[in-house]
Image 1 (cartoon, protein in one colour):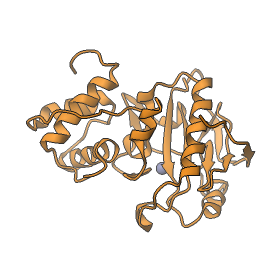
Image 2: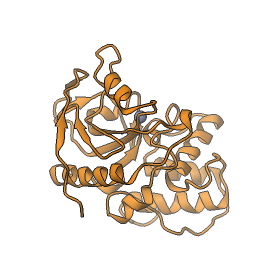
Image 3: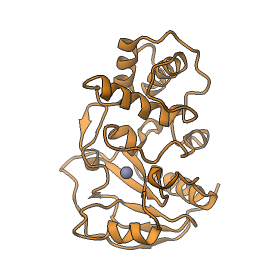
Image 4: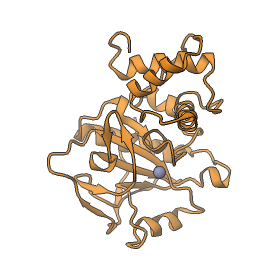
Length: 239
Ligand SMILES: [Zn+2]
């Protein structure tokens, strides 16, 4: 297990106080989606951009702290998880330098992932955040966001006890009503219409079946949905 590398302080002005009494119980992972780490850092510290994150992790594994964890960083935007809006209130946001979908989805390099896992362990020692609440931006804002993207190794984080992973689920006959119940039981915002349902399914696949992200409810996706719904609720019985 790697020790936490030194964290560089680079204060961003894009922050404010968390609401009184807000729990810190969620982590949201992002990719920067920009050409370079320097460009992303400049934007995350630009008052005009009005965006930030608590941490930025460079591709070589350097960790920069932009906002202290007990303050609110502005990373998730309009967002929802498990009945709560505005995930910025209660989450810690981590940006991973990666060019993203617009630039061909580069893999996440080993030093960056090692730094992320060490940082996650340090955060989890400070705050009671369950594996089911380590989320991607695309989970909490599936109508707008694709990050950290299907190349992010969620399965590896799950093997380290940091995230949820369904393992091998049984294929099930697709049932749209059951699928929607499972999505909502996992935490996704209830889809509003057919397009929104497809985007929610794509977000789920991007996270739990990254080898095929097509937004279609097939038998494998149906099986995975039911499996993750049970895992998300602590393995307690049916959804
Ligand atoms: Zn993001």
